[in-house]
Image (cartoon, rainbow, N blue to C red):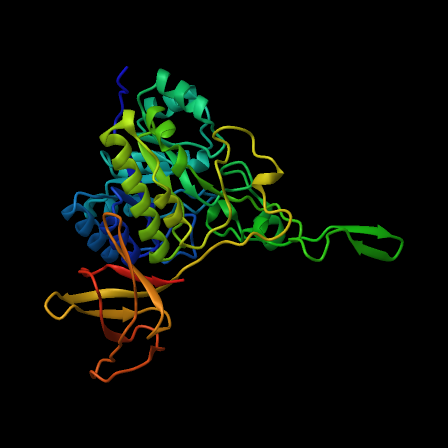
Amino acid sequence: MKIQIKKPEVLAPAGNLEKLKMAIRYGADAVYIGGQAYGLRSRAGNFTYDEMREGVQFAHRRGGRVYVAANMVTHEGDAAGADQFFKTLQAIGVDAVIISDPAMITICFAAAPGLPIHLSTQASTTNYKALEFWKQLGVARVVLAREVGIKEIREMRRHTDVEIEAFVHGAMCIAYSGRCTLSNHMVNRDANRGGCAQSCRWKYDLFEIDGNTAKSLIPEDEEPFSMSAVDLSMLHHLPDMIEAGVNSLKIEGRMKSIHYVSTVSNVYRKAVDTYCADPEHFTFDPAWDDEIWKVAQRDLSTGFYYQVPTEKEQLFGKPRKIPKYTFAGQVMSYDPETKIATLQQRNNFGVGEEVEFYGPGFVHFKQTVRDLWNEDGEPIDRAPNPMMTVTMHVDQPVEPYFLMRKK
């Protein structure tokens, strides 16, 4: 029987304007960002109103969408000015706001009627009756709690037509979504008001105490005891997510680099398009998996989607060796006649090293750096200074905003 599917949105993180533009260029249908207040990533670059306006215009010209996270849990006084904030976002043309606090939802409805609201994962929505409750309240989309499984999503879709957004890649929270207070207790930084210190990512020792003597129980060659979860990846299981009726596939990581955002967006764009073009004959391409491992991340698992995670889904035991590539440069221009590209250097590289170029549409090729010139046209052996402009021969055509990396 023919599989009935609807192509989902690929939703990427954007911690600043550069990342927003890169995510859209590399295949994201939509991005989520933070403003200067009311969000949960106070240490991300975040956006001024002018940056939001530029980002929205950039995305809309390319058929993309921009969502703004205002998903903090408000205490008394925290919501001051939120009405004007939502009015401004609506005037800028933001496509939706992501909120968790009912008070903020009420303010948004009153101040900016018609501005779509997406319920944040911080609200811990885990069943279809809760989805229906939020739908009846006027919420357009619900971002599911990370603890929800595939079978539960299928059941949700059977009972409600509200849009469902679910995480498919990135960091996992060790606490129940929107319920962590570790950071509050340990460093007096409120995780649910944008100040999470990621206490669960710290390294903890385990001691046996005998009188005045404390003995570590962790072998020296093993990772110190940690509550930290490995990262999530549903790349191998996208058909399950799509067939279950998920409308938006969310990539975590507003603090991540443009190397990460472009790479992961590129892979998920290619995988989703390939599956949706011919679901019955879909075959997973191992190149997608290889590509994911070219950016820095923890080990990967499927989180709660198929089972309750065990100790194998936490960072116990010996440290894992994660393959990494270094983001080395960004193409600014290319002359097809001379085959010379102008690049903005991002990390040290030089003549004789093998590099890889990649671009939107899952384009890749490797070559050796044979020559290198500085801004004055003088030959150099290495590009040592961050953000310096260099030129080099590139064997295959590249375009502005193609990226170069090295192992």
